[in-house]
Amino acid sequence: MSAPPAFPIVLSEIEERGMTLRDYFAAAALTGIFAGDGLAALLDNAKKGKDHDPLIAFAAYELADAMLAERGKKP
Image (cartoon, rainbow, N blue to C red; front, side, top):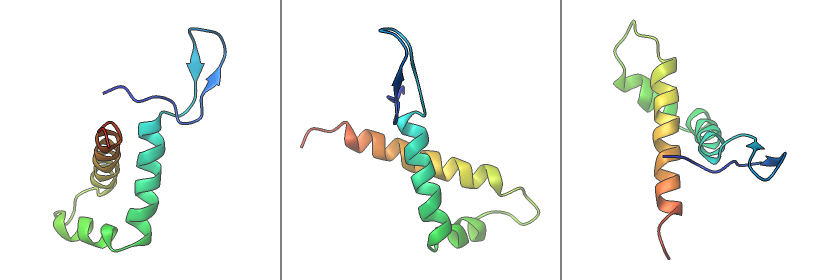
């Protein structure tokens, strides 16, 4: 799934740079995960002795993908 940039910088008619909307949503999701009980739930579900960073990143992008999918629905 290709997401549009969150903060595009148009360099020409064919080139844009900037954070993707998916990345922006994932960053927002991470903020929520770390602010609430989401992190504790993720860590409780993870096996001990494993690196939790990939699990947390995966969860943030799963939420971002869900937001993009919902955003694409017609009201």
